[in-house]
Amino acid sequence: MAGEPPQTRDRFIAATAELLQRQGYAATGLAEITAAAGAPRGSLYFHFPDGKEQLGAEALTRSGDRVARALDASLESAPDAPAAVRALVGALSARLQASGYELGCPVATAALEQTATSTRVREAAQHAFAHWLEILRVRLQADGREAAIAQEQAVFVLSAVEGALLRARAARSTRPLRVVSQQLAAYLSEPPGHFTRIE
Image 1 (tube, rainbow, N blue to C red):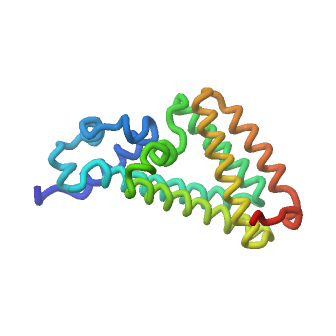
Image 2: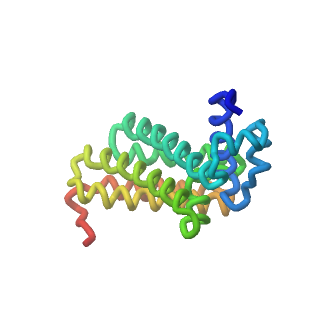
């Protein structure tokens, strides 16, 4: 299949990324991926000789990068950290509701399923979370926080949002996201000196 166009590879990654976000790694089969990509199964192994694990890791990396770009744009355009978090959670809430509560975090489900069994998938998920944390840390530090405090607050914000996404999807309600948005905004409105680093 030397003549395989590069677009075929991109279609496989895009299709896998959406399926992983919608239903997770275990429930996503190669036949479903090839059907969603509109390409023959032989093409999948041509582009991804290590099969589903390689494709899954690359799809998670693609999703992580896409979220990072959106997160960076959201945080950069906001006047301060509380406004940035409200905008971010609002966008996530709208997307989740519009998808019929099927599209939560594009990384979390596969990460939860495969961290104990797939090094590639675990590392791709870890890279995505680390990238998001760094974007949050930079924004929080720009508001005057010390680097160490900004880092820990970034962990807290991301963990709260991820948990709220999971609960909102399970409950088929945006209320967990609305609560987290309001509470995080209040938390981040406190003066940076109010917080201490956890050893």
